[in-house]
Length: 139
Image (cartoon, rainbow, N blue to C red; front, side, top):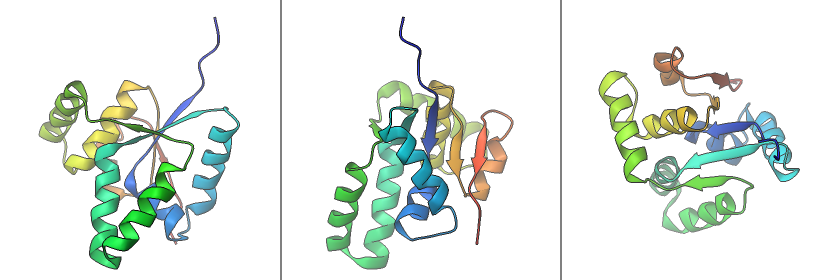
């Protein structure tokens, strides 16, 4: 039986760190390099992808959204669909914790894949007892 790879879930702040050259960019790049080498699996919810895209459109316009989407889709990550089971899991998390609905999808993915969430979003402090969190450096 082939051993399974370690998993990690990215939230939108990890993608923003990468795209906007924030303090956490080196760590995100390291994670992506390890994914390319098949040393770990990286997951990102399509709901968190939507969160990134709407924020990019607000800040920079729809043309930048297309470029951003192409960039993200080229990364060595698995974009998780919002299946019925994932929607129910995220809804349960949102109902019980002070966290955004989009972030609830990252938490649900972390639970599903027994993985930490890589984030710089302080809102994840509300769920640090139910999932593992790897904090990105801030400024």
